[in-house]
Length: 543
Image (cartoon, rainbow, N blue to C red; front, top):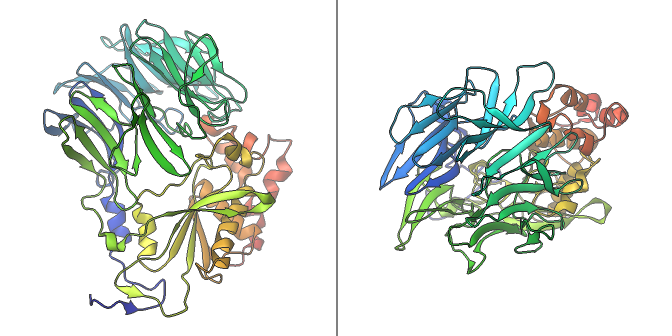
């Protein structure tokens, strides 16, 4: 490559990132846990057909905990999560192929503790009298039955039900005095609509219009939880006053409960609490008694304390995810990387937070990425084509953590805008509820508005706008092509074309999701038909 950039049209630049390289290189890092001097995490490995591998760091050594036939994942609530827990040198985990639960000690042989049956388990928690878990029973006709059960680690069994009768459960957490906290909710609510915090089976917080998440206990026996009763997911401590916010602010201390086992705060042995929260797209970590906690990442997870320091999983705008240890003596040690090498910063386009006007006098948000490749320049006066990305969920969000799937486009001379349309998380309950009854309208409006606003601002070519997305984002893509005339092309990956088919065929967790997003069936069947791109394919006039 010469020092002088080659002049070529936007979109035709030669990139160092191939699709094959992106698909093969990325290792998923998740669910960091600590047990004394041990630090555990999961690695999702594409080269092993997506197998989720339990890893352990101890006394300077990194190793796989389990033999290669084991896959540590769960399918409770279909999306899984919370697939293992560790305490006192023991690890309990869910084996993905058959849903059975296993127990393994330090460097020992795994031992199965649940029968081979159509049962799923997740969100484990060790207690004095056994191991708590969320169980999903698929043996009967109709919907599977969810409950909280107590497993006996010394023998094989299905588990003794301790909480049952609700449609869904999550986060069983035993306190130091033996009391059990968990959350529960029922159809038609999703866990970001309304949940209840149960203490020994009795409701102590939450209910209609309030989403309660992530119960946890401090060493002195105080029950903490996250609630959006203020309009934002904030951290509370349970008390006789109905709960007191520990740091009330217009910020999100949690995200939507798609998967089990999330922990965005941790109660420390010294009585302090470390929290992670997000405000205006920025992520902060703080110890409530002593102030901001510097992790070295722009988008860190909540730090996990271990004997000797902190384990932090994070990502930056210009580097892929990695897991670092922050030792008490000031050393920083990297345990795992999602990619073997960091990209050349000269090729990395960093996401810029933008907000823009959209329908109904609203404001929506996005991350904008300009084309970047030091080897090429565009002809004078040319503006780049734009790829509009619509995230899945639709109750979800995009962030500006390094994404090779975005850099694939920017290094080729495309601009990208990753849209957080009305209904996205990270901006409070009111913003999240903009999509109630309006899926297929608000999301489409906001993706179209992002494209036209960038074109009107002179940042992209108004005649070269394309849209893409997967799952719910694929539906938004198809709807944008069928019902609007903004884009020149679209790519729907595993998207939804027929909304009634989705309502008929989806799993229990999502089976009433559309009641909020569109309306209940059969009363609103006409709306389902009106917003199903499959029934309006004649409105699509581009590839």
